[in-house]
Length: 487
Image 1 (spheres, rainbow, N blue to C red):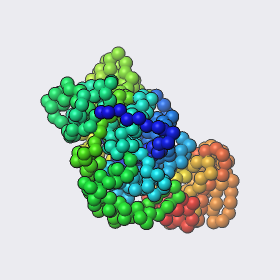
Image 2: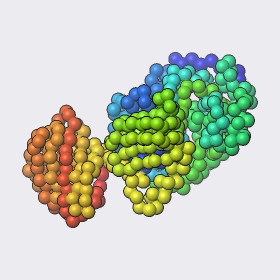
Image 3: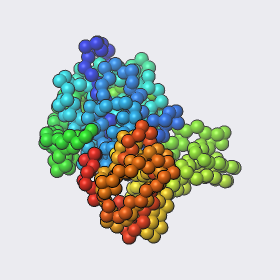
Image 4: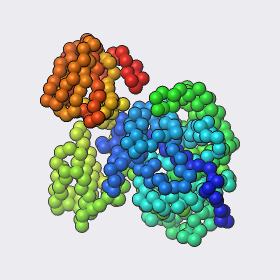
């Protein structure tokens, strides 16, 4: 394609739009619906989550603005906290009341960007669950693509294929992509080809993997969605028109958004538009889809084994062992993935892990709570995890309360609680009486008593909570006052 020059001194800002609504079931049991993979620290090279890395790798990009994040309502406090950890104040965190694939999410972001900025920003659409090893090459590719986005093109970033992958979509370009020519107009998209076709495609420089990363003007994508799928734009306009600001979040109209077609931006727009352009991205891109992908990109010993956490292996080849809590040992095994968490263990042939999504659905049908819920449950004030429980008569939990945070003023009709401070200082209110409880001290909270636990110190607070009573469910809470606006 003809080269286009851009003056970044006068150019409009780039707003990253981070799509963070996935469930990540193919990385079960580590990733679950209550805490999916995008919030996990899966990059061996740093201690940030996939979501955090999605923005951090853009640092240094010219005209970079704060992000718009689209996420599931259930994960809103996780997103807000992870952004605070990296000192980022998003332009908006839009809560999806239901999951509707990427086209409605992109439409929401484009409409929102025009409400909160006076210009016509460039939107960089990113998935929160990708790993990109070379951030400089990513920023270079975005800078190249920016020129075409300013001219009204819709850019998809394509990855030079290295093997006949059948799990990715492919992009056919009009011109061969090379080190000299990194951009071409798009001829067509090919959805997840069978192996024989994939083997043919990778032999030509006209074909690239579809990374699912896009760049375009907000006005351009709105116009194209209005042209090819007008119901999405109309419904999203209605959904966002009377949005409600709730702390750091924007709540949209559920009834209107629920009417949106469940369709990807690729199928709705990119496969139909005449404005499609592909820019080569060779930056160590990986879509973390399953445990085989994690094994492929991980460090291995000379026998092809990858060990993570407290793991030991002997007389074995090409295995992936990940231990979250207990010692995990493999002996005389080959091509096996073992993933251990506190409440579930996966043992699978490493070539069968792509079927995990169906297995998780089966777990849900059979009422296994472990299919969806993590042992550690996150709340706006911190988190809690169950250490031990028996016959629904007693339960031991570990609570971690962030500095400056507090649980709601509440009572329980069916259980009493005994709190022991492990570290930090707790401020406890029981029926209006205030007590300060320090390390190795404890306090008893009878059932049907209004109480609140606060951490007014600058250090984290860790509590062991012992519950006893006739019913220990999480729904046995009557809230009277909550700084996070929960009912």
